[in-house]
Image (cartoon, rainbow, N blue to C red; front, side, top):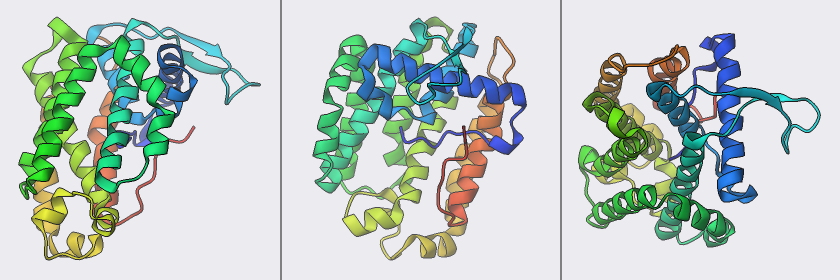
Length: 288
């Protein structure tokens, strides 16, 4: 994953700021316990969302305590105490990040040193969660096959990432997984893949890396031109995905208050899409 599933921070309730910080820091600690300290550098917002979402759907509440950590040694911060579910998601975080690093090595021919730095953390994650590792590997292999075919179908190329998200969630939720949750996570996966591709258009154009938007619009030389001349196409592509996310998110059966997940699903991803479509530099909107 790429860290795009963030909050619309200005519109978060104070209680949800505390919960989000606690979940983020708790996932960091969970990664440390599961995969070692190096793995904590791979922590991202997408997995924080997934942790909050799945804890809520399963009715497994966070236990929050004030604790210190490596970065905050003086003042204690609210931290979600690592539990069995967060430990699984911690391993998933490292697995996904490692495959993304490997994908960068294949695409750009560089980043091997960075990937090797996290190899031991990945091995620990794979040992802890072999099923999740197999799911990620399968769909990254499918994605590379499509990339080698130089496909220009935006929907077709985004499918492996969407399916991967759906299957990951099914494995974590087990018997409480529903078709509605499947459709939601499938479309979130597609959105993550495509918003990353749009955001990286210029970088991928320069490096020669695969990018489905470069293939689909081969006559376009840069992202600014793409956003101007193909605005209608892009609004349709992302509008379809966001509509599916909104529709299915509205039908999820939560066990607890879901203001935080609503903020991300109804506002956060919309603001991130809008920002990139307006050619603004993509920055993390969640500040701690």
